Image (cartoon, rainbow, N blue to C red; front, side):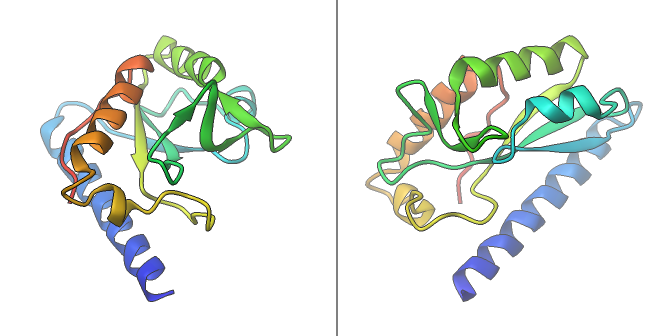
Length: 154
C-alpha cells in the first residue's frame, strides 16, 4: 500500500511539474489540460464534453502488461471502452485524430492510476536490464499514435 501511495504522489508531482513547465514555456499561450480516462471509454467524453477550451489532453493512464507490452496484437493493455472491452489501437488512433483535428496536443500519462495486480511492474520494467526495451516500447507507441514522448524515466 505504501508503494502505491508513493507511486501516486510521484505521479501527481510529475504531472504538476509538467503543467508548470508547460505554462512557463508557453507564456503567450494559456495552457488548459484535460484528462481523458483510458479505462472507461474515451469516445463518449469526446461527444458529450466541450473540448474546445482544452489545449492539452492527457490519456490517463497508459500502463503495460507484465511483459512490458502496451499494445498486444490489436488490443491495448488496460484501456477499456464503456462496455469493458479492450480498446483497439485503431480506436485509440481515431480518438487521437479527432483531438488533433481540434488542435489539441495529445499526450499519454504513463505509470499512473490504480494498477490491477496483473499489470506490468514499472520498477521491474525500468530496471537497467529492461529499461532500453521499455523506452523503445514507449517510443513506438507514441510514434504510431502521433503522441509526444520524452525519454526520461526515473
